[in-house]
Amino acid sequence: MNTRTRNNMKFRELIESVPFDEVAPCIVNMEDGFPADPEPYRRHLEMLLSLDVRQGVDEVCHIAMDYDDFDDRMRVEVFDVAADDWDNVLAMQVEIDPDVKASRAEIVARCLWQTAKYGFTQEQKDLVLSAMKRDVRKMEKGAWKEHGKAK
Picture 1 (cartoon, rainbow, N blue to C red):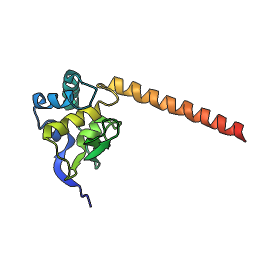
Picture 2: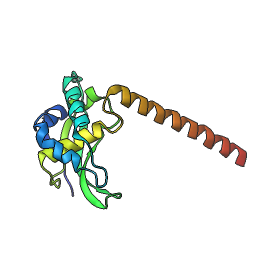
Picture 3: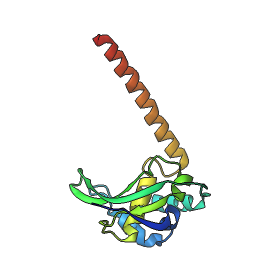
């Protein structure tokens, strides 16, 4: 049975616990075949740390090892942060599975990768999520039209 370890650390404390110069090489090598420029992540981190942390958050950011089909390997994964509001994410309690065998810098790199998944800035994120919602609505309407024709 895999039990989670609850750290006495919030997400914000985690991402500010390692100097970015130690995190940057982890970002560059994070995804096989997709070398990443660390500078947008540095600016993203600075932006995150400039935000006020939402009060009263009782949610958890779960960090575990997960199988990546594309790269055919296990990697650190950060759950429940990509689409959430960043001020909320910063206040989340961090739980790290005991089988996570990664440095703190690697974990922080994956945290930044996930929070920037839909955009490095709030404007970018809002545009991407809005487009995704619009596409889902279009697909749902099309699916219902097709379903109605089949009857």
